[in-house]
Image 1 (tube, one colour):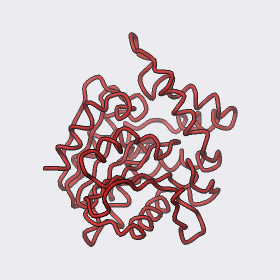
Image 2 (tube, helix red, strand yellow):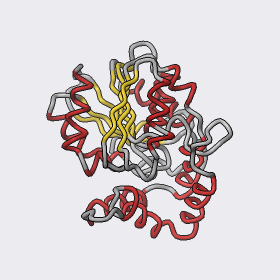
Image 3 (cartoon, one colour):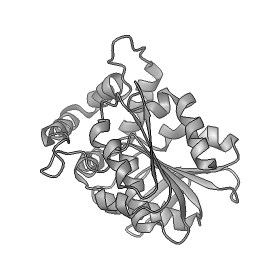
Image 4 (cartoon, one colour):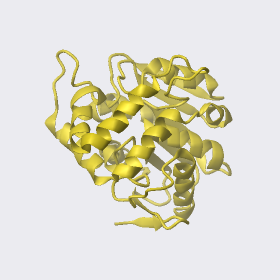
Length: 277
């Protein structure tokens, strides 16, 4: 399996498909998943002639099950080392959920010098998820305390309940559950490290990306389903887009958090149009 070793010794697993001289698209997965969550998009854009890359964030998937460094600054620095090792230039960085936060921090802090051409935030956690005096519309910290308690009590059951319910909207009236999708979410989650996943809850919920968003100078597409039960659109995409210098907001009526998996026929053409524009 292809891996690079980060300065602190952590090994980061990655996929790198397609012509090395083609424009690269880098995909950043959500919590607690892995690069496998992008299978549909990887195959779609590979067929369009792009170089497609996805990595397992530290503590996730096939990367080292780290007990330290599970926070956004380090996540972004890991991506910077991967991009340098692969000599990526003019890349499009696409992040879903927690991966959207990773994209925001990476592009803001490490994306200069022509390394990044465009960015996409899908169902992404910025600007900040948790409720604070400056973010009164956020979710109470007790919600994330509940995530942590459920992970500690029975991670395997928690990782079954999340995809079977709110993540893909299978808990909505009339929704048709997809057992393979649920099992694949569970599989990806259980590959990762419990300590890293526990720490990442704080990273995705409490990190404030406001200044990162303001610093991003490249065209950025913000995509969000208005029935997202994991990252509510009102305190996420609708607040993020106005902070971006070159931001475009695309709202999907009735779609949920897992739209890249459940609705690739909608998401992929819009991504392609933005990338080609």
